[in-house]
Image 1 (cartoon, rainbow, N blue to C red):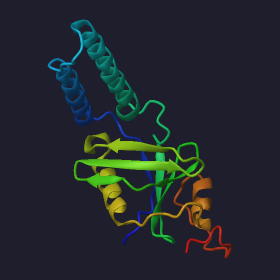
Image 2 (spheres, rainbow, N blue to C red):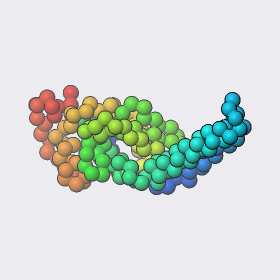
Image 3 (tube, rainbow, N blue to C red):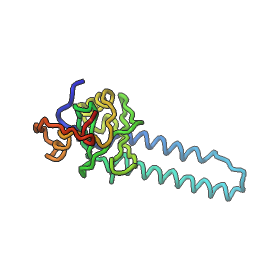
Length: 187
């Protein structure tokens, strides 16, 4: 597999396709509340429908802010490196915290769902990327490397990756030294 020597920095833009999908899904959910019947009095049925409608609107607001506009998203601007030593993709958040791609990530011609987890905690965050959110080359590279890279083992960073991450994510040549310590060796 060919490696990508320059890191991919993911800063997705507003996606019109994703906005359309969100509008259709949430509008459909609100419309489905109209014919919904409950074996309760008319007054209680209306109250329940209003609360359900508020939950749908809250979901639309949260999804739009978090996944469409990327407000306060922990992995907006994250950097992906291909680790040749371990044949896997290393992820680093914008704050410099290492993360890994967890199972359940999905790659398709029209959609990439990246499930990422910081090494320091167990919370999984998702980046939903449509083709119109990033440039074509980045989308293609990301799909190819997601399909062919192995899963990284957490806590096993090679010395080269640590140096590359701390030198400013440049394409500088890192020393070709590897320690034999089992905590840093990849295999």
